[in-house]
Length: 115
Length: 114
Image 1 (cartoon, helix red, strand yellow):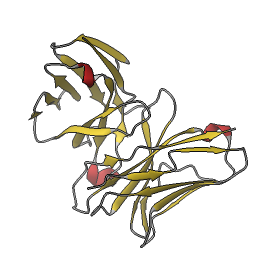
Image 2 (cartoon, helix red, strand yellow; image 1 turned 30 degrees about the horizontal axis):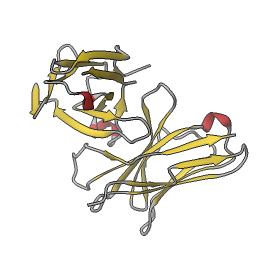
Image 3 (tube, one colour; image 1 turned 60 degrees about the vertical axis):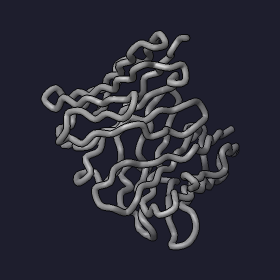
């Protein structure tokens, strides 16, 4: 029973390039969450998605960041025109579709480095 | 404005003794609390959770206590083992209010010495 999968595990981009981070939830899970962790900080919520729907994007920066969870395929977190401050670990989590279930299971993360 | 606070950045405990990790929160709407364990370069691993209708939940060596009036929860690990050395994050959720996102503390680094 595979857990949450994220790729790539490490991503290096130069300033101004685009970063695409992928997340495949656990089997049977239809809720996906993205979090960002800066050094020495806790995880900060970015966005919550269900299939083809963004449920809550209150933690997403207003510009350059977008997320999707299509009907088929993984969830994608896209960062356009990356800047050095985007360097962080990005974690995806998933949870089952039952209402009221708050336990989220995390992937190993993608470590983004912006040069 | 931190809604979930872990005021001890680090804790060192001898193997076999009890580890107590603390967490405070400010938002009375939170109704579900979780503890995660994280090793370097890995994602957080779910450990144990507690609903606001309970004051204690136990799973093997791990027990979480919730004091709603004090807005405080703690994680007890007994006996502590060297493999428990990791960063522990407390997280809270107000499911109906926040639609599922977790609010995390900054973590406490636990070191269990043999």
